[in-house]
Image 1 (cartoon, one colour):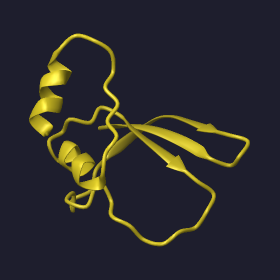
Image 2 (cartoon, rainbow, N blue to C red):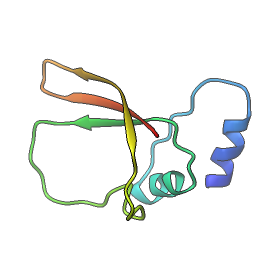
Image 3 (cartoon, rainbow, N blue to C red):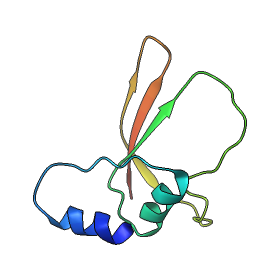
Length: 82
């Protein structure tokens, strides 16, 4: 699947939005195919889960692009890889 996303990135056109499971997203992160992350922070504490960075033991440096808070309490943080 990463090969298909890489091929799409080489074509002219608009941005690509990828929605999928953690395994799919993690494979794109590992291949360096993600240009921007958007993290939606919801004001609710929940249990654990898998991370899209689970294979990135050395960490993943990100640069903040912007942050928007909404009246409902949700905050959207946009990051780019360094």
